Image 1 (cartoon, rainbow, N blue to C red):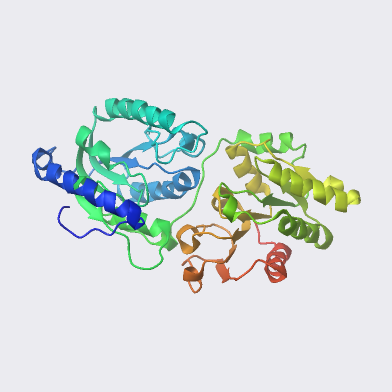
Image 2: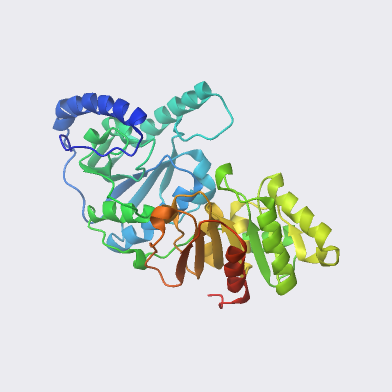
Length: 400
């Protein structure tokens, strides 16, 4: 789509360069690129290429679309281009035929230099193109609407109908170029909009979240934590997030965990990858020396499959706005604290009751059309927030 006024998802310092980029992309798109013709879309057994430069949470959420595609096209073939950091979510997914790596420099969080990120980007891009150009895809979906889309791949591969958002450049290369709606929105609503152009119709209520992991992870998780299959009721604590500004202080988590120890019979499992969670647990042990057997340190011990398995065996999980909010709510009741976060855009789509306590003003009166979902707006995370969390802790919905 060329010529429509674009709404960039970027500050002016980024939007102006994107306008310059898109001027030249549009010139190219009107020329030789416009003459490409790879035939008609196969409506019986379409080959679909999904692209994303996002991270684990993005990978988990957009994977919910794969069953919707298969419901409409039972014989569809789905290939995926993503950063190799998404492998823990995507490897083993039963709906994907082929996973192809492209480590976009714009979203690479590895602790390497910017130059090395671009080298990795270039190397994986060449390898991805070599694989992709052996196929002709009926549809491509680039789900990235913020930074670092992968539309730049389109001139090098064969796609009959490309769909994506032009909000961060390269939109002239798309057959269907979409723009962000006004106001607040949920990430998955944008994916549902893209699916409509493939004649896949669904709503937020029709989505069934899932995460496929090997059955052996159930036993492995218990063994690593020295628990038996007849373990006591578990409450999981996920006090970490990849964004420091969205992290609640140690004192908040210690107070929450202290109330759990005093008011319930839960065994508390602290999950994470950094010393932050260990600090919370150590303070708990100091304050509750007689309850140390109920405080389990799982920091750095479990892989993603084992965390999912542990969530399946838990009664409740307490998280921040991070991957565990989405992963945990697939398998158990969840309370998520969205501090300095993005609000509705990344509220978890859950199979179990979810309470989201957040301070996102623009999402103050917004919610998800999902059974068991509740969101509460707060100006500060204080004792009242802990009261709401504890109210959920005393509720024990049956496991599915």
